[in-house]
Length: 203
Image (tube, rainbow, N blue to C red; front, side):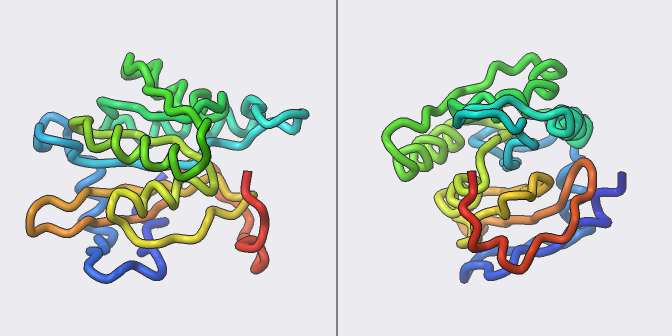
């Protein structure tokens, strides 16, 4: 899959945010990890968990389609393997990262959702800043945009409930350099979201 085909800038970028377009982000995503700076995270990759199974309760596993998408995530990160993985306490996030974990042998850091969304977001952002190299964050439809904001990115809407393919790549602000954010997609293509999806309650 040619990821550059799906690259597009994020709408509503906050003032001071640098949006990196297709040619540059493709080179950034594919650069060998050992060539990146060793002080702090050189790149943060944020995704929502893959498709979840339709079972009762608030902690379902992945569906068959979700497991396929989890494998696609590992393939998308093959040339830029993460040195740290951060997930929530819901199993669908760790299962989404499972194929990546198997290839990298990186043990994920689990940040609990207890204490509310704001506390979780703050803990994830703090944990990201303590890492080095490439950091993979697997979140939820409402936490992933909030984590981007907490890391100095723009204010983005919650991810539509039926959308699982967003692939955000972020470099954090460093001195005079502002934060930069790009969005592409990974895995199987999805139907175009409904106009009303922004009003849906994400899970």
